[in-house]
Image (tube, rainbow, N blue to C red):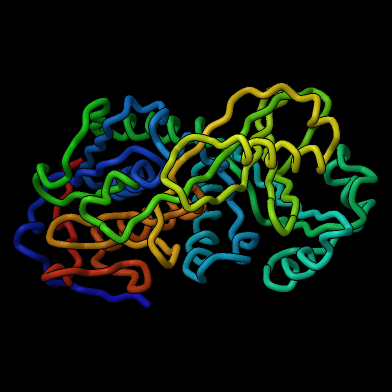
Length: 356
């Protein structure tokens, strides 16, 4: 449901610049959508722009709304499907080769459950799996292929968005912490876990990944292995590298544990024994900001809109959320399922005039 408002709060009527705080995937997409809509934008982040301290640095970058239907709210799927089109438009060279789901015979019940509750897939037999991923020939008797899905490389696309922002005249003010309350005018707070001072319901959920390198295997698309205890995904990267992940741990310790690393690598070995000889490139963990319902929110109070709670779906949902924020600001149209209004900020703060 959407709500249209034409009344503009006086404090926002003449805001010359929209300030976006947080240059990870959510903040970068918000800045891009606003700049493309003609708004004057400044993007702030305490990091230098290389993502090294951001949750986005350890993200898988999977764009898989149908696969995520297993555990996600309908809002996540809706935003995810819209984001697929926005990613395709912004990065036409991105890998949209689908997702492949497999399981070993002992985990057949998990496989059938996944098939029942996820849309958008087609069943593939052993021969079709081999055609999709020759490296997996003879390893699985059947699978689920989600042809509409894709993936991006976070450490490439976020800096690429920053370059586009510079070309659009956006002011990138990186390398120093910024308090959103200290900025004038309309502020979009995309700081993730750092925004917990204003969003006390937010918590961190740890996701651990291992990056390995081997020339013995080639994959075209993310492959997910279903397992009752440690489901896993393997995402191909350039230069014979693969990101292995899937752990979701209720912990705010941002270090990877020995147990998780062993389970991730053991699961990769279960997909293909050649992964056992791969070289470990790096291991790390990121804290995904999440609300209790695991759904995203744009929380508006006064002149600050806080985009947060993207959980494990940051890259999946960021473009559609940025589009919704831009429609709210520019056109006065609010997505009532996404937006949570607080205090007196019940009207859309559309900008009557934007300085390019």
